[in-house]
Length: 114
Image (tube, rainbow, N blue to C red; front, side, top):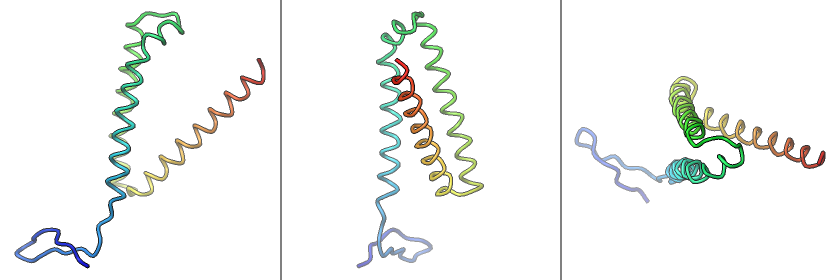
């Protein structure tokens, strides 16, 4: 079963199948990014109390975090053009999971000390 995609130079472009996986991954990534920004803004008051600082300092840190994230997006987009989208995506997943594992191990060591 083929599906009509569009026209190119007067000819029909037909695809055998359309994969929805890239759209799902991109939508989930955008959702997580928005969720991250929301959590950062909602938790500001508690972070001010926990770190014994003022709101201005925390707002600066959130702004720096946002700028660093945006600059890393630009760099990763350029690397995707050079190396390839799939390789950079897999590298990002591996890097994120390994950093999460290191953080989990470090927090486990801190709990054992107490």
